[in-house]
Amino acid sequence: MLFTVKKENIIEGLQKAAGIIPTRAGAAYLRSLWIKAEGEVLTIMATDANIEFTGTYPAEVKEPGLVGVNGRNFVDLIRRLPAGELRIRLDDATGTVILEQGRRTYKLPANDPTWFQSLAPFSSEGAVVWSGDFFQEIIDRVFFCVSDDEASDAIACLYFKPVGEGHIEVCGLNGHQFALTRFTHDDLAARLPEEGVLIQRKYVGELRKWLDGDEIEVNLTDKRLFVRSGDGHETLSLPRAGYAYPDYSPFMTRLAAPDVSLLKLNRKDCLDALDRISIFNTESDRCTYFELSGSEVMLSAQGQDTGSANESLEVSYNGSIGRIAFPTKNLMEILTHYQSGELTLGRGALRHQRHGRSRLHRTDHAHENRRRKLLRRKLGALLEGRFHHEAPLSPLS
Image (cartoon, rainbow, N blue to C red; front, side, top):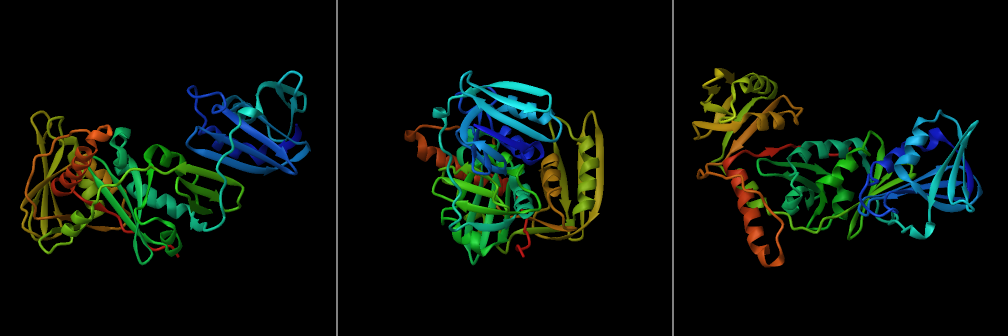
């Protein structure tokens, strides 16, 4: 194998590939970056056995071939080289990859190409064109609510669900918050299965690095979600999770009931007030208390060692609840994910409960029913006893 390529043409792709290569654990082929030279194209591939990356870049190929190298070392070396042409060849006699640039020469151990396992290809059939920054905005609206406890199965995933007439709901859920955003995209809604699509939190983090203002192509198979750059040169694919997401529709219906208490307020005024009041929260009481009336809400907090704080906000309130408390930091986090000036907080006229902080654990099949009941109970407790966060988005133009 022998080819030349410009550093500036491949460095971004190399860094994306390096981001998914395991640092220590895993087989040697997983820690490898795979390079294939053929025709006038250099293909760079990497996987951690779950996430897969493929990038194609222009190169002058003199001898085709396939080889693997230690991914992180190879990328770190090229990143530190100056811009310009790189000459890369495989020395079969010594089993090394030789990289040359001007008066510089480097040798890296080559991995046997028989270790290479083909990656899942992107299929253009049924692919949907989408805005990368819009996709990023959707994820940002709900991602902070996705549980970071991998043992929680479905609620450790971002959930996409078609709900009819081209509408899609995207949900995030943890032990404290529930976030839902809706948007419209006819083509994507038609591609989503009725039961929805789940992507684990740990994979969504890698997906977010990909999204910017450029167009992307999205496609699905039974097992994977594919995202391809608009120019078709780079593809990222993620595994779909096989869990069943908790049914949140009964709680959404209840929140739309006529007996729901509604509080309309200025987002920035409330956020600023909460920021000041948080100074007076303590380890034993991290809440801000809302005293509600028709046109005013009194926010307060106090602690034996911190003192007390009271702030009044002009609001529009219609409901039967006179006093309610929210965890200050959690509510502030939610408010920062909105852009509109005025927000509505809704709370159903529901029975009060005391809610523990029990964690959900992965169990064997004998306990599956109990686990699902616990998930439903946790979701119910969340929406009944805490607060609901729903972030509407404008349809994609």
